[in-house]
Image 1 (spheres, helix red, strand yellow):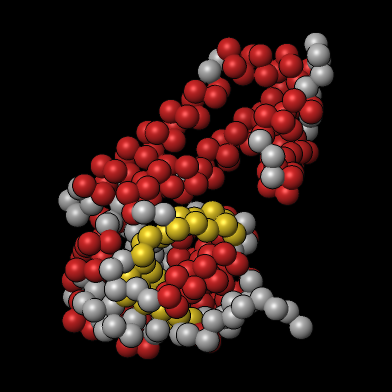
Image 2 (cartoon, rainbow, N blue to C red; image 1 turned 135 degrees about the vertical axis):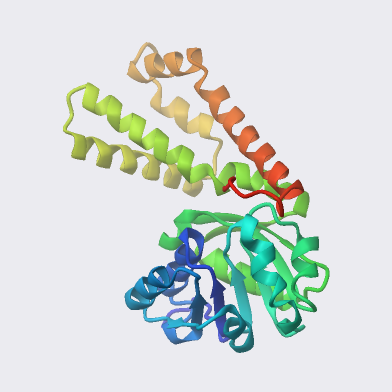
Length: 283
């Protein structure tokens, strides 16, 4: 019998785009809940119905139904529609609701203002949660109890790695792990392109590239050492690895990644300061 924790609470998901869908798939894949515990709604009905058919979850008629029938409510909408989504529902929230917002850049002060007496959590997860290998940082609001933190740790800890931070650091989490998978996808694609240039078939090059990244990350996490130690273990004096790394350093590879995280962090900060007036900027 599995010792993996399960949730008894009913789950509501407002928004079934990339993050909402990733969350639902992850919850079901890890068997944290059963499909009949999840009620979801999206303004794009076709998107919602496809997910219902795929997973067996329940479709709500509107967001009001989500609030009326759910204990834990995940708000997975884009930051620019957060205000309009919740303004109509503010009166419906009670202290019995745990609201977990995935809307990037929307501060807890706004979330709490728009959700009545609900207990609120702000979290920044990432796409790999749908395969149980995500990474997230979260912050608690002003009305939370110990069970709320436990629920967040159960859900997102079962779907990957999760850490609690002061809210001001969530922009940095967005810049590193929230958008980080996109950086990694570009790296994998470019690595495979290099393999093709060297003569490998495209399909095999892509698989080798992705597996190399996944294996290297797993090795690093399991051995719990500084990445430089593992890099040095591969690099022989005057060898192929040394030649490749010398070129990467000369071209500024390390600095590019550092600058990319900084740029995404600053954009998240900007969106947080202007989140209710922006219409074109997404995570």
